[in-house]
Image (cartoon, rainbow, N blue to C red):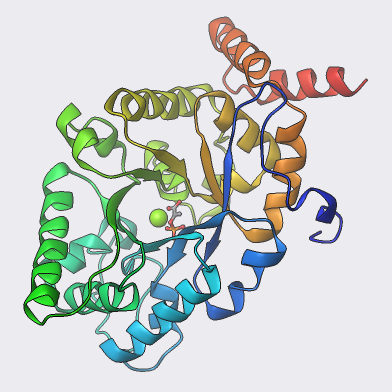
Length: 325
Ligand code: PEP
Ligand code: MG
C-alpha cells in the first residue's frame, strides 16, 4: 500500500476546496519509526508509550526511557511527536504489576487514574521525556482525562518535574506543550476555561465511541452495531470541534477511524484539521482528501441529519459514487 501511494507521499494534504489537513501517524515501537519517512506522515500524532512497558518483563529505568525517547525524537528529525504518558489498565496489563481484578476494567483504575494515584511511574516518565527533549520541542499528552481537575493535577506533576530539572541545572526542552486526550463524553462538557487552558486536545475515538454508545470496543458483537458515522456521534464530535475552535485550541483525532478514508473525510468535513492514524492508512486517506470538497460533504452530512438518518454513511457513499460516475 505504501508503494501505491508513493506519488503523493510528499504532497501536502490540501483538499480540493483548499483546507489543509495534517496527517500524522500513530506509533509506539522503535520498529514503527521508519514509517515516518516512507508514509508521508507529518509527525507522530500519538506515541503510545505503554508499548515499551508492555514488551519488557520488568519496569524500565529512567535512563533507559530517556535514551529511547531521544532516539524517537532523533528519528522524527524535527517533526512533531506527541508522547502520550502511560495508558495501562483495562486491556493493557503490565506483566510485572499486580493485576487488580476489577469487574469492569474498561471503566476501572486505568491510565491517568493510576498515574495520579500512584505518581511514581508518571514522574519518572515525565523526567525521562524532559531529558530526552533537552534543547528541542517536547509535546506530551495525558490519557483518559475525564474531568478538568485530573488534567490540572497531571500538569502540576509536569510543572514539578520541570522545576526539578531546573534545580539540577539541566537544559530544558526548547518548548513544552501539554495536551489532553478526550476519551470520555464527560470531558466534552468541561467548562470553557478548561478548553482554554489545555495546549491541545486529541480525541481518542476508540474509547470515546466505546463510552458514547456504551459498547465494549473489544466485543465484536456489540461494537459493530454502532457506526462511527452515526449522526449522533458525528454531531457530538462536531460540538467538540466547535468548543476547541472557540477556545483557539488545536484539536486532533487519533482513533483507528481516522485511518478509514470515508470516516476521515467526514471528520474533516465537520471541522477536524489533524488526523493521526496507522502509517499505511495515510496514503489512502490523503488520496481521497486531495480530491474532495469539504463544504459539499458537509452539506451531504447536514442534509442526512436534517432528514433524520441514523447514520450519514449511506448518504455520503451515494454522494461519492455519484461523484466518480
Ligand atoms: C483511543 O482510545 O482512541 C486511542 C487512540 O487510544 P488507545 O486506542 O490506545 O486506547
Ligand atoms: Mg484510548
